[in-house]
Image (cartoon, rainbow, N blue to C red; front, side, top):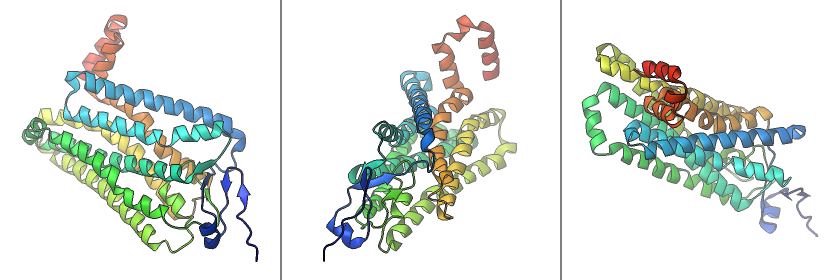
Length: 339
């Protein structure tokens, strides 16, 4: 008997069952984006374009300042520059493609492009989480064990740790992405998100997904929860040691402010996204919005936070805009505050 072809929709195929999937290979997915918000498409496009430009401008500026000013060649500033680079790559794996699809008036993304995007997004996300943990370790050692901190600085241990976060991030999500790509998909090929994210795409697999689901859960627990627990442990140790710290060590506690602010934006938004997905909100506008918040909020705010909280970067900004000559009273106030 003649077999009906899968239903075709604008921009791609709508998958039917496993037999059809084998006969008519999947060519891509439909990224639904913000459900029911088609009338706001132009406004959302302009918003994310502005946000992306600010993210790139702010974070690239931080990288350039740290790499070109020898006074900023300290472990904490080196880690900040790495965080800025990761934020640029993280958002670049998502937002430009989303903006291009809006211009082309399509929600379709090809199969290979989807999984390449998925790999780079999750790799940079994992690397960022690892680096935030290393930054907490940096502050812990600098405050609670300054002599050991000098040794770590001399032998460039933080360079090695930062490099390790990149390598680990680029490798740890390769197995689940590859595993997901070899499974058959059937039913709908609509991804309720603005980009190809592992959990959203995995939910469309039409066979037994115990192996890939278990792998995703294990990775999420190992990366997110273990890193968060380690971060909390470092800061608990700092708080417990506060009474016995010297005056100079207590002054260093203030350098944790920027890192804590970034954590307060990043981890809650990430936890909200996972909670909404696992509790059945994967096709709602709340779920999609939470995904875009944790993709953009921390990268957008990080440069601002570190410009305000990091003394060396703040002084570099003042030097670049020549505030001491144009606004001497502002410069004096900033100098007093820095001291």
